[in-house]
Image 1 (cartoon, helix red, strand yellow):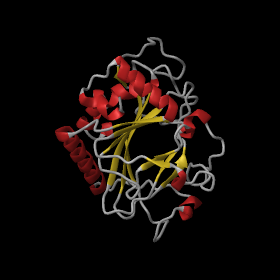
Image 2 (cartoon, helix red, strand yellow; image 1 turned 30 degrees about the vertical axis):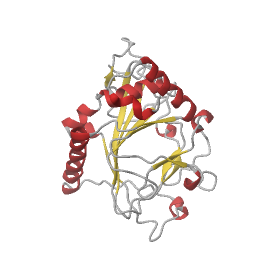
Image 3 (tube, rainbow, N blue to C red; image 1 turned 180 degrees about the vertical axis):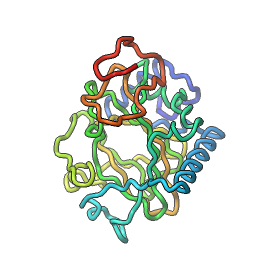
Length: 277
């Protein structure tokens, strides 16, 4: 059974859950075709557009284009330093509809399946948008460095709100790279990425997406994205989830958005050190 056949229903059978887990274990990612469609997808798109519009009008800074010398190595015409990625953290604080989305079975059920947990906990949420023509690339990297965890259950569930291919900035991955664990040679000069000459974007595997598709990948999977040189936006929502039994190796000051149980229960009623529920 392919991933696209799983969501004829919002209920995953044990066999479907096992197949998702097996695919994720091998590749470090799984793609769910058309996890959201019709009115649900249209409403999500409208809520995101309104959130962006409110934020821009209020003067909120949305620019999130990574700095660093890597920009000059991206194969794109024009001013490579002037490209753009817009970002809004903690979307659940901006819209009740988007907050409710965090609990939707079509999002949390496959996310729980790939990490092999009945229960699922939120780490954070994020909106990314690459504007037409000037959308920036993201160099290849692992997300581990941002929030290293003890059990490595952290995953990103990315919901695409626009059709996305290489021409407008789709995600590209190195399949199976999660098996290497964390790669120490990340560059930390204005951004966080692997050396461009060793991990070029154009050598990664593009994952074309349709609006409503869901891509789930490990925080150890090497990934990045191409620039948006098309006439179309590339908007997506990102939900970082983990097992409630996992926790960070260190907790940064000002960390917010963590702790919501979005599926099941917290199986450990006694908080560990650093937890506060």
